Length: 109
Length: 113
Image (cartoon, rainbow over all chains, first blue to last red; front, side):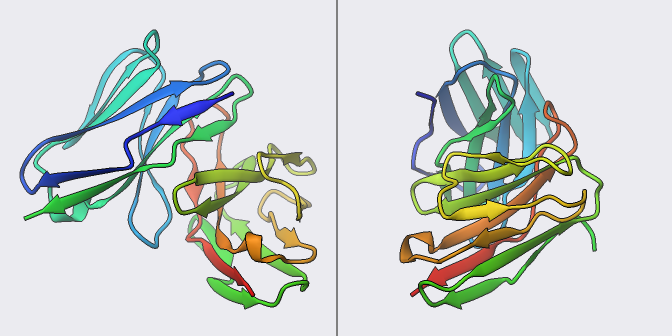
C-alpha cells in the first residue's frame, strides 16, 4: 500500500527553528509537495520538490532524498502565525497526490 | 471570482436527502478534484477530473458522484446523505499533473444528521 508518515503534532518556540519530517512509501514518485493549513482554512501551497536537495524560499526550506523516501520542511525564525498544520503529499506513478495526515505545529511565545 | 469558489460554506443536512456541493474555478485549470478531510485522516480523494468531459474515482468514491460538463465547474453530489459523510469538503484544481501546485477552495463544512 501507499503510505505517508508525518508526526501528528510538534511544539516549538517563537523565534526558533523547527524541522517537520515526512517519510513516504508510494508506487512511483513524481514529486513531493508541502502545504500549510491554518485551522478552518484551505491548504495553501508552500513548496514542491522533484529532485534531491534543498529548496529555500525565505524562512521556509524543503529537502528531498528520493533514495531514502524522505523529506523535511524547515521553518526558521518562527512566528506565531506559523501555527498551523503542515501537509506532506507525494505524486505517485499515476500522477495522483497521496496525502499525509498532517503535522500540527504549535508555536509558543 | 479569483481562484476557486465553493458553495455553500456550510450546511446541515438531514440523512437521506440529496445535496450538491458546487465548485467553480476561473483559472482555466484542466484538472479538478474533490477531497474530504476528517480529523486524523488527512485529505482523501473522492473523485477527480483530468479534463472537461472526463471523471475518475478516487480513494473514497462510494455515495458520491461528479460531473465535468465544462472546464470551470465540478459539482459533487451526495445522492442520499448518511451521517458518515459528515466532513469538510475541499475542491481543488491544478494546471498540470506534474509540478503544478493544487489550488484549493475554502471548503464546505457538511453535517449530516
